[in-house]
Structures are given as structure tokens and as C-alpha cells.
Image 1 (spheres, rainbow, N blue to C red):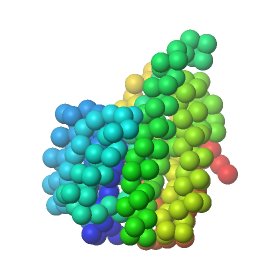
Image 2: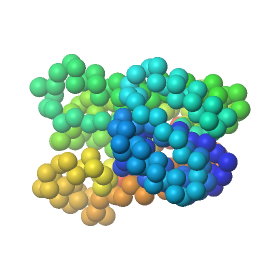
Image 3: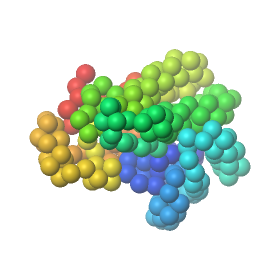
Length: 247
């Protein structure tokens, strides 16, 4: 489905981002993976390369504006083009609102929202010139459902991603660029494993399917949005939450 396509995936070293990278590779895409942790990124490159596709990596902080320009320049140098951008890098904190410092507030916003702004702004001229592209942003059901174990900065950043997705979809449709978001619910990742077992049990009970989502299930949705099968889909945010959030 993605043969001869080139995809940039942030947060590609683990969790949902890594599952998306594997799914794209299995469907023929060449990859440029971006993440903050060098060791995990090197391991992801080694494992995904076994599928038989070209995988390159860049490690760095997506919250730094200069990194986005470097990512685009390196991708063009290595692959000659860019077709797909998956903005999956993100962080979460759990400090209650009353105790949340300005530094912690801004750090989450910088990584989760500003990083998408910087990289999308850097990639879009390439997509506009070729009049083709897919941008997939990782939002969250917490953009609409307050969470007892998340800081408000995370929820606000994810709500901002949904709004930014709509804005880009509206303004860049004329260039044949589809921009969509995925809003996962409770997915079985390292992020979730950091929470107390009792909290995870409560989450399961609140999900109609009575189970956690798997990263590969999110990756299947991302594959659809990255492929030509979604050529008439833009500006949408897709809930993948086992029914815990329904529209």
C-alpha cells in the first residue's frame, strides 16, 4: 500500500510510533524515524530494517525549531522526496493543576503541540510542490475527556492538535494534501505501564470492549490514512478507544 513512499515518523522508537513504523515498512515505505532516546532509536532501526526497507534515524528534541528543518533536509538528501509525515512524538505529566509549574506546563506544550507545528511547517512546502501528501497527527481522547491521572497541559496540547489538524486540512486540501488526526484511548504502551495496576484495571472496566487497545490497532488506522485508500478523507479525528469515546 505504501510502496515507493517516504515517511517521516516522530516518536518512532517505541509504542504507537514504533508500531506505525513497522506497519509502514511492512507495506513498502522507506522511513526516517525521529526520537529523543538514541539507544531505542538505534534498536528500532535495526529491527525494522530486517523487514527489507530503507530506515534512517535522527535523534533529537522535536521541541527545538531548528531540528525540523534538519529533518526535512536530511530526508530529501537521503530519499529525494517526502510523502507522509506522522507526528507521534509526545510526553505526558501527571502533576495536578494546582501544583503544575509554568516550566512543566510549557514543556508538554512545546513537545506535543509546538513540535507538530514546526515539523509540519517544514514539510508542507515539499508536499505542496509535488501536490501530494499525507499528514497524520497523534491526538488523544483526552482532548475531549478529562483524565484523573493526567496534567491539564497534556489535555490542552492534544486539543490543540485536533484544531491544528482541521486548520491544515482546510488550507492545504487544494494541494491534494490530506491532514488527519488519530485520537487513541487507553493503549497498551510503556506510557500506560508506568501507571499503578489498580488504575489500569479501572480503565479496562470503563472500556466497552473490556480490554486495552494494542499499538498495532492504531497502526492499522494510520496505514489507511497514509494510503491512497483515504484520498477523500481530510480534517477528521478518528477515535480508536474501544468505545470509551463515541461520536
